[in-house]
Length: 352
Ligand SMILES: Cc1cc2nc3c(=O)[nH]c(=O)nc-3n(C[C@H](O)[C@H](O)[C@H](O)COP(=O)(O)O)c2cc1C
Image 1 (cartoon, rainbow, N blue to C red):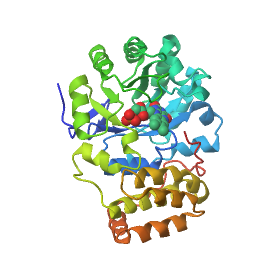
Image 2 (image 1 turned 60 degrees about the vertical axis):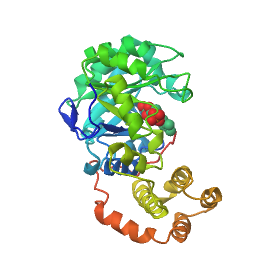
Image 3 (image 1 turned 90 degrees about the vertical axis):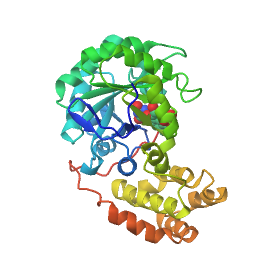
Image 4 (image 1 turned 90 degrees about the horizontal axis):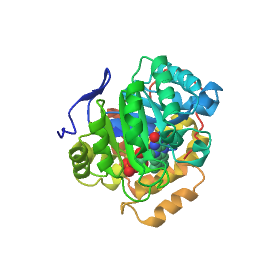
C-alpha cells in the first residue's frame, strides 16, 4: 500500500518525520548538506561512508566524519569495512558520537573499497556479511541498517538472497539501490527488484535510485511498497528538488534563492572543515548550484578559477545582489552550527 511522503514512520525506536531520506554520498554528504536536506523536508539524513579501519586508528580525517549537530537528527552514520570485530568497534564510536542509526555499506562499487573485501563485495559473501551485521547489532543499542546494491554482476539478484539473512542477523531496515556494482551509475535503477525485496522482509525498505521528482517518488513508493525513498544526485546543489519532493517547494528557485543557499552552504562548510580544505571541496558545488540553466555556463568556470572564497562570494553577490538580504533571512531561520557532540579535530574530506 502506498504511503504519503509526509507521513511519519520509524526504524526501530527512531521516529522519522517524512518518507524522504537524503542519500549518503562520499565527498558530498557533509554536515552543511545534511542540515540543508533536513530544512527542505528530508526526514532522515546520512553521513557519507566512514572507514571502520580509519576510526580504529583514530585517523584525523576519518574522525572528522563523526561531527554531528543535534539539528541534523535523526541521522545515520554509515560505516564500511570487512572485519566484524572492527566494524563493531566502529559502530560503538558512531553511537557515542550521537548517531541515531548505524548504517552499514554493502554497496560501494569502487575498487579501493571492494579490494579490501568491503562494500559491494559483501553482497556475494553472505556468511561474512551476516557476521558483520550480527557483530554490529550486538555492539550498539541504536538500530542497525544496511545499504546494498543488487549484486556485483549485471542482472544479479544477490540482494534478494542476502536481504532476509541480514534481517535475521539484526538489520532493522534495508536500503536497496538496484543497480549492479558493475553498472556503477549507468542504466536505470530496477525497482522491480526493490518490490521483490519488500515482499521478502518484514522490516522497512528504502528505495534508492533515480528519484528526481515528487512524481517519481510517489511512483516508486507505489511500485515497490517501500517505506521511503532516498534522494541522492538530484539533491546535489539542489535542495529545491528535495523540497519539491516533500511538497514544500513549488516552482524554480530565483537567482537570489540559489546564491543565498550556496553562500550559506559555503559558510557552514568553512566552519566544518576549515577554509583551506573548503576552498577545494566547494568547487564541484558551484557547477551543481549554478547549472540547470540558472546562470550562464562561463560564470561557473570563472568561480572555479578564483583563489579565495571571499572572491567567490563577491562575484556571487555581484551576480545576484538581492541574495545578501535573502541570506540574512535564511540565517535568522537557521540555528547556528551547533557545538559538536565529540571534541574532534577539523575534518579533512577525502572526496569521492
Ligand atoms: C558522488 C556519490 C557518492 C556516493 N557515496 C556513497 C556512499 O558513501 N555510501 C553509499 O551507500 N552510497 C553512496 N552513493 C550512492 C547513493 O547513496 C545512491 O544510492 C545512488 O547515487 C543512487 O541514487 P540517486 O539516483 O538518487 O543518485 C554515492 C553516490 C554518488 C553519486
